[in-house]
Length: 184
Image (cartoon, rainbow, N blue to C red):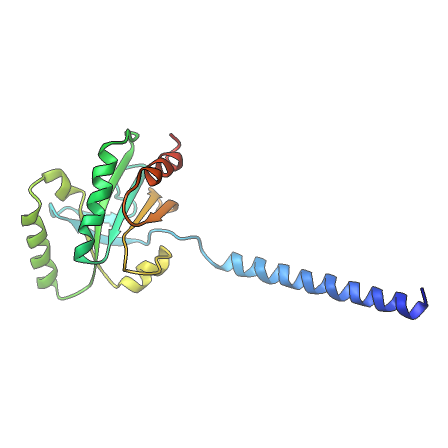
């Protein structure tokens, strides 16, 4: 091998090494600045008119947030509520329905809560339904929710850290995945 060829290989190897280090550092810096999805701090009221400061006022150590954005998604939420009844959950687990609606005039929010309250006969279901009247953009960004076209089932701890997530209707496979996330 001639000295020039050896130098060429050495220079090429150095360029590859430096390039890979730069890419690695770039990726590390990008990952370090992107926060993990977490439930953002919110003030909201359940359908029994109890005020919650979320996520800390969620009553379980682990809480399944069933997040819906459209009225017709209630049927999707219902698949989760029915499915969860057939699974043995830990005592420190709670499931909440979180209808998520763009913030409007206060009178409208009160009127809509009244309509929902009147449509839910079961007191426990009203207690576990917390309507979020919020600016949805930051909320969706905080939880890495890409679309309002489906529901999201997101398991969080008392601090709001996302422990597990899925989207769409309940299935037995999703129920088993949830149990694994709960350590069961």
